[in-house]
Amino acid sequence: MKRETKHDARYAVGGNWTMSGPMQLERLQKYGLKPHHTLLDIGCGSLRAGLLLCEYLNTGNYTGTDISAEILEAAKRFLAEKGLAHKAPVLVLVNGLDFRELDGKKFDYVHAQSVLSHMPPEDTDALFSHLHKVMQKDSQFLTSFFLSKNTELYSGNNRRNFFYPFLWMKETASKHGLNVEQVEDTPWYDKQKLLRITLKH
Ligand SMILES: C[S@@+](CC[C@H](N)C(=O)[O-])C[C@H]1O[C@@H](n2cnc3c(N)ncnc32)[C@H](O)[C@@H]1O
Image (cartoon, rainbow, N blue to C red; front, side):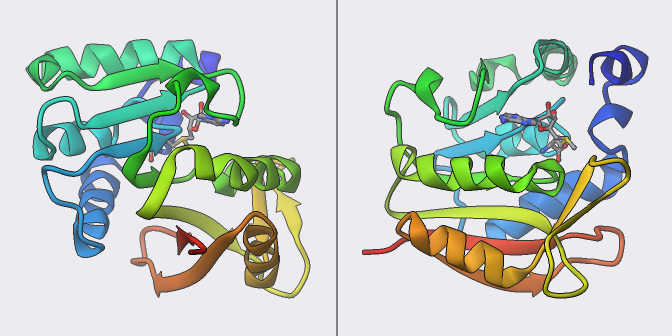
């Protein structure tokens, strides 16, 4: 990630900014995101969607986390170039999946695009186990993932991509007190599927 970000911080998060950014914003809006909502973008990268989300949300309502200091530096640069610093996004360098850096803050929406698709199952399990720390009763977690072509969980591209059966997602989420639905097929230019996760009441 460090090398890729140095080379091109737009390409490092997957490129395709003209389609992926608007797609992510429109999808969140489809699931009810309004400017007054707070949003946590896990693995926000260099703000492919984050720039549009900062523009859309009220001041201070966008929080992005990432494990890469380099990508967050690029994110800050892009924010400044777009004149969006006044929207006061909160960008947080994290060191794991337990949200300890967020000091107990909860969000209306939690979002992760192209993050679980690169996460091994033990990390996805860990992420699910900590979601209750950042979600409240009516929060929604919208996350993309690669759907397995069979009933097995497998990796590809030298363990850079992970393909999950829906049943694995459902059972793992349930174990951590979460409901999960696979809500739609994503457009042709995004090979991932979408999950909508909520807390079990
Ligand atoms: C493929 S990029 C996608 C970035 C952004 N969501 C987008 O769609 O443009 C995945 C990002 O997730 C970050 N990441 C990976 N594991 C993470 C973790 N445990 N917590 C936060 N960010 C993570 C990576 O550093 C990278 O910036």
